[in-house]
Length: 118
Image (cartoon, rainbow, N blue to C red; front, top):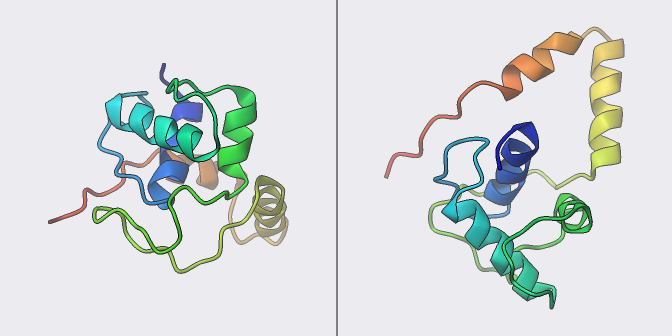
């Protein structure tokens, strides 16, 4: 599997503390392993496959790692997580106020993220 939805999934997983070393937008072994871990934590069969229900659960900001446990490779996120509805409203507000243009968001999302230096 590949595409924008996979890239979004990888970004969410990365922000939850999972190392994402797969190619952006490609469902690879790191993405699969993170999904299996989340499935185990929620009492689901760890298939490594993402259906719409699991995708929604992941997007809702459910904790992916036990409290206080973080991956050594993931950066700390100081900002509180927001749900998709809040994020969409914020983007609409920024566009309506002229802070960003509608095409700028998509252009920014397609940029490659810098690699973490160890």
